[in-house]
Length: 92
Image (cartoon, rainbow, N blue to C red):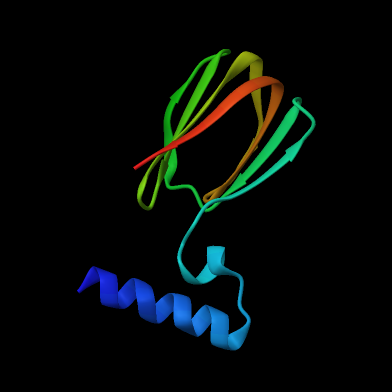
């Protein structure tokens, strides 16, 4: 059932020319150099320290590693992180 639902959402996004991140509930990452990262469509902070940030996603987790990480802004589904970003990993 999930596969059919996912295929229907993808077809609707393609047909209506909608962004897939909106229709499929995918995270959207905007990175500026290796110093700033803006993440949309997360489901909450699982862990935060100056060298690691883990966020829950609708399907899995997002892990950001680096140094001197600071959460500048956090809203219900958006996070803005600054610091030296070394790695971004999505896990399902």
